Length: 295
Image (cartoon, rainbow, N blue to C red; front, side):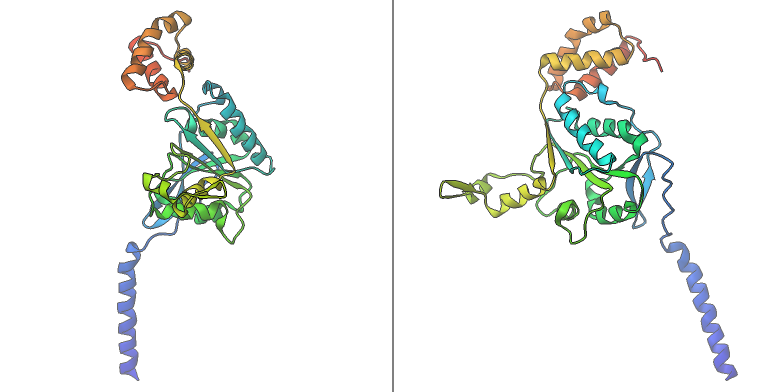
């Protein structure tokens, strides 16, 4: 018996040494989320585990900073107000021309309603498979959460495509009433469309019926209850946006008038009259002329 006991003790000692060597290699349990650290969070995967990382410096853009998209602001603002107040609201898909304020509108909405309990979680397209985990993580929280995915698009076999469909409304489990998904995309149907798909359309009794491929692509977009479309700006709208940002950067009306020809040349060189181009020009012009916004 003594020999068996000694052998058993040696085996236990070896197992303990082995565990001591393996423990540093095992993933550590995720730290609890500090919900007071910020109003915005990013979902990040570390050592195979997902965690919410607070955003230390949240973008301070306001709805008043967004020019010439009044209709879009009103739609998203009304939907978010309903959501924050516990009323029925829709997931939102913001689509259209690049640089026209889609993602900036979501950030501005967060700033408007953060004091009423709105929070934002930014999720990259590659992490959309974790959406069920994120929803479960925040389901018991008193805050209201917008899960935000920017510049969203998918290829045909993208795994995040079906994960997003499931969370929007395709799962057996009911979605949490304190979570909405806001996504931006340059494509309304979120997936590339090919000429070959046009051959799948059929005419039945005077009605046009899309084929299965097109139906699959449309089905994801249709799961967003609210579509908000953005359009390119004309010249006067572009110049008004330039003027707004120049004022924000400490320029007076004389400066704004002097900057107009250069603003037009800047847009021409970029091939676009977007809000983003206007912001970039204003920063360049104000910096070259020694302007600095108060505060």
